[in-house]
Every structure is written in C-alpha cells, then in structure tokens.
Length: 377
Image (cartoon, rainbow, N blue to C red; front, side, top):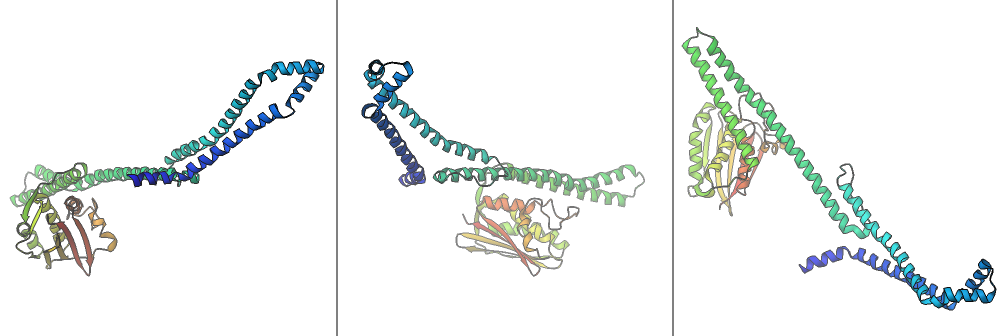
C-alpha cells in the first residue's frame, strides 16, 4: 500500500513542482506590488504629486491643496494601504487562477477526445502525463468494448444467417418427400419405404443441427456449472468407440485405442464425452477411406494429454485456428450433406477451456492430429 501511494505521488511530482514554483512566483509578484505601494505612499514623492494634482484640478493654492490631501489620503493612510494590498492580492489570485484552470481545460479536452473514434492518442502537457496515460487507457478500453460489441452483433447475425441456411436444406427435403408421399396415391411399397427412409434421415439431421445451435447458444449465454466426478478415461473412450462402429464400418476405418488402464480423470463426464464425441466424429468425416484413426493418452506431469490422429487432407496452416471458430466448415460450403453446422469443435473448445485445459490441431503430410490437454484434478 505504501509503495502504491508513493508511486502515485511520484506520478504527479512534476505537476506539484510547477504549482509550487508558480505559487512562489505569484507571491513574489504580490510582495513586489505591496513594496511598490509602500514606497510610493510612505517613502516617495507621492504626496507632492497628489498636492500638485489638487492644485491643477481644483485651482487651489498650495496650502489648500495640501490640506485636501491630508484630509482625504494622509489621515486615511491605513485604509488606503489595506485597499492596495487587497487589490494586489486579488489581481495576483486572478492571474494564478487563470493559469491553474488551464489544466482542467486540458483534461476536459482529453475526456472529450475519448469518444472521438477518428482521433489518435490523447496528448496533455508533460506535467499531466499520469492523467494522459489513464485517459488513453480508458480510450483504448472503450474502443475495445465497442469492437467486441460489433463482433458480438456480427456473430449473432451470422448465427441467424447460418441457422436459416443450414436448416433450410434438410427441412426442404423433408417437406418435398412428404409431399410426394401425399400426392402419389399409386406408389409402390418399395418406393414408399425409400421416401420414408430419406425423410427420416433428413429429419434426424435437422434435429442434430437444432441441438448444435441450442448447445452453442447455451455455452455462449450462460455460466454452466460443471459437475466434477472421477471417471476412467479408458472406459469413456472405449464406450465412444463402440458407439461409432457403424460409422467406422461405412468408411472401412480402423480405430486404435492406446490408453493405459489406470488413467483416471476428474471432469464433468457428460460434457467431456461430448468433447471426445465431436473430435472423433470430425476425424471420421474427414478421414480417407480404409485408413486408421489413432487415439492415445498419457500422463505428462499434472496433466493428461489425449491425441486423436487420422489420415486425411492436410489442413492449411491458416485454417488450423479457424476450425475452432463457430460455424466454420473445412469444406468451405454449407451445401454439403456431411458435417454439422460447424459448431462441434467450437463447443469442444469451450468445454475444454472451462475445465482449465487446452486443445490444438496440427496437420502435415496428410495427417491431422488434435491434442487435448487436461489437468488430472
């Protein structure tokens, strides 16, 4: 606390020094005025000037002019001197006040420039460098807040746009096939089953997309409380691999699990399952057919590192960070039937970060690796 107080005092040392020197200068000026007044009235030829003035102004002889001087000034010398001193004080104080208030004008100008988006750094006199620094910090913070608000507004607009686009395709398919079933009275049972199968598939995709939008909105708009429990990482990953067997068989993929039996992880089991689900689904979607997906885990100090490696198209360096952004799709097109709304990895990243962990991706030589780092407890 003492160091902080000293630092603040030191920040305004130059201003205090200038105030002190200016006050001393004004005091010297006032003392000079008072000395001059004293010398003129009591020690100089002031009386002779006043008598001569009375003679010329009122056409009086010397004796009458001197009597008038003594009656109006000489006998009131204490009052005259006091008035002179007070007048000198107010003149000096006025000059000092004008000089002092210029700093308030400078600070006021700096505050007005805070809202000027086109202006640069606020500049104040050197003795106000501490205030200048704080005003510029405030200006930068406000500019950052405005930028964040614009980005949030853009994200909201993007979410509405992508929602409309991604939901439109499967919804249009569902309506189209249902219309065919409704309008075609003489339809074969085989064709009916085909239409119903396609309709069900599109409806399920529609449900998945809606669930993804709800999930990302939930993570963005609320402070989710994590329900921590100790879980076996091996059992969790084995369960997920079993559930993905149909998808793996469709692309003739082999998934290898290399995780020690005794690895325990303290986490929100349901949300961490969602993380690994999203990463595995992403690996399956973008893997070459007939290749392998490797899932490995190991302890590194106080952390557990889980890696998911698959063979697929190399992801350009500039896209490796973008893949964790909301609505980002590697296929650069939202018209494809594969993949979700581009929210899976964004949701995974948010869950991992809420567990005080991290996720990163790297890709080279047609190999893609996702690396998840989580604290053990």
